[in-house]
Image (cartoon, rainbow, N blue to C red; front, top):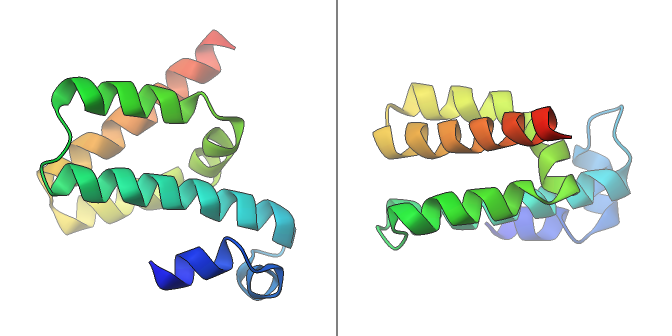
Length: 108
């Protein structure tokens, strides 16, 4: 996660990696959201998150506008990544994140 830490905090590095339609500052915010998802995913895969905590944390993350923008932009990739990795835990967490994102959009 060293690269992710750097691209989330270094504007020059973010400029080099950001998609053409995303400013470096916006990309840095999106990568900070990605860091949060990576941390949750790691804790989940290590078995450090209970089912109740999983739902609570997913809901808390999706309350954040930057997280929702991240999911809207990169959620499809994360879903594809989970599906091709064939990890049931990753698939489940990704599905929870997607449903939370959609339910937040529906409620808004």
